[in-house]
Length: 294
Ligand code: ADP
Ligand code: ZN
Image (cartoon, rainbow, N blue to C red; front, side, top):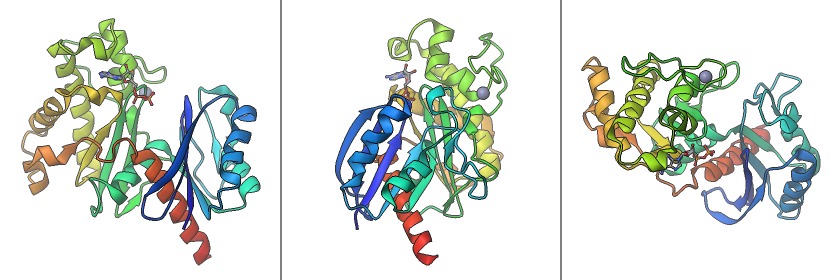
């Protein structure tokens, strides 16, 4: 079966054609401009591909409530041209196939849980630490939604006693994103993360904040595995520091076989940066099955 997949990002749109086994047959990337420029290009890519469904992993926040009049809209995004834009409706009208729709990071969580390192687990998480921080949560084998979708990147944190950086989040200052995203690292230390590779204190502090968030996710969601992706994790020494710090902050309170093997509990993505687009394929497949059942 042929499925379409779209990873809709703030800088580029990755479009692909694949199948129900997660195989990507072809793909293109289109820069994200205003909808009136970008949408016709996306539609013309998918229009003649004979796809049976399309899955979209989208930057957000987005409206995922099927009972809402604005289901399928990108809502309060800072990318103003896309604010309140109903991307699902546009594709539905143009392609007339089932359209699966979720956040980009939920797409990545689903990709890893279906074909990657979290395959077979009932409960897992995917966190991306890049320009922003986002979380995708799988629980009881399904993506967790709720009234909107989880926004675990904005978890409120306690500042490290030696850190006086005020935080970059315009809403919360010292949430995870405000303290530990790529732009937060750059604003605190005056240089981009990639230039700070040799500064151990940078990565110790980074691990301190990420671990604090992970400990909170562990307490609330009890995931069987946590996958961390995004540009900041290209720092190779970061993952071992995060694992150590999670253990230290958990302080032995939770005693499970998963936590005994931290190297397999807190891990990097496994799908060569295809987790997002493969997850979008799966979103399309899920929607197809849902609509077929009627
Ligand atoms: P985006 O989040 O925009 O989709 P990325 O996941 O690549 O993109 O994240 C970009 C952020 O990650 C930037 O803030 C950048 O400074 C940071 N970053 C990228 N590569 C590295 C690296 N090797 N070390 C530390 N930080 C990095
Ligand atoms: Zn915030």
